Image (tube, rainbow, N blue to C red; front, side, top):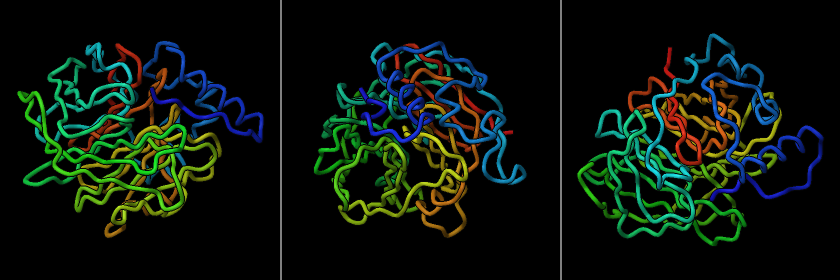
Length: 320
């Protein structure tokens, strides 16, 4: 199970409150999530001004608008209890791929938009140490899935791994790893749950999960090199990044925490990581017990979120 955090030294009462809530989320089922944004102790510490109405740090006219959460259905796969990654299929309309984090086999779950299970697909040639993220990106001969075995709660792994597989047919029972990418951080181990892949060239980036300041690292050969701290604009708060998603066109990036969601806009010709160094727009999210996953729709006209724990709603936020 992915733990929200390790206990740090706390500097302020506000941060202490947010940490306490994050720790509680790790071991409890939590309250039933509701589609509307319900302020909570976590949300108030974690969400920037304007999150309730989809505004944010950018000027209102510059930020895209999204409807409030629509519950599309309940995830019915009993084995999908600790979902940590979610991505929309490029080959199969209205299908998403998801996976559990540590403790499960190396497998993917194909979900329909109503939350029902379409397929369970084993990933041959992969280990499942602590899978935390999944992203779309180029593979040989067509669209691929990049599976991020990047979790490291004790910050002790010498390397983390990204597995690249071709996006499978829904009739398949297994898919083979096409490429294994072992990576080490240039400045020592980090915990991470957010994986980004540039859809144009397959560049891999990782956003760390840490109290105080998340950072973005970009793969350079087998080394993850730090490119800077992730910006959250003027708002302060606890920033534990639990997932990321890149639009198919590569022009937008979503990051989520346990209690907020943020959209970054990428300029033409800009490296993927550079978009995360500028202030984002805050976008709506649902009040989930342990929000771990976020994914753009395949057409970019909205995004999905999903929480850990069995029987959770699959939420969709439609672009206006």
